[in-house]
Image (cartoon, rainbow, N blue to C red):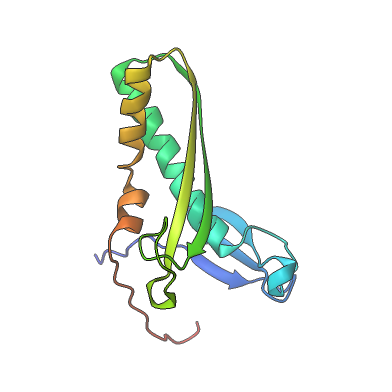
Length: 149
């Protein structure tokens, strides 16, 4: 019996110039480019999906941590914005196009009766979710053409 790795698939759906259906594990998400990038804005952009992965993983990681600790947390929300900067360290310094970096700015909101020490501990945990670790390290991407069908 051969093992096949789980995957997601992005397939053009014909609804717009760049409109896609992205599916995996029986779920489908609409993806498209915004109008300013030549799309029809029929779904999240690929960069929004990447930011959504970080926001989702951070929020789930914090929920798991709060449950394990038995802390009274009602709702956790993580908002992530993405931008590119030409600054070497991503936060300041001399502009240099060769050193452009992606910046994922996370804002974590926790509704719960937590003191400042516990809130800081939650923020520390937020920086260790799986997607954060992947985005913080170098990755390797492989690709190959395969036959249709």
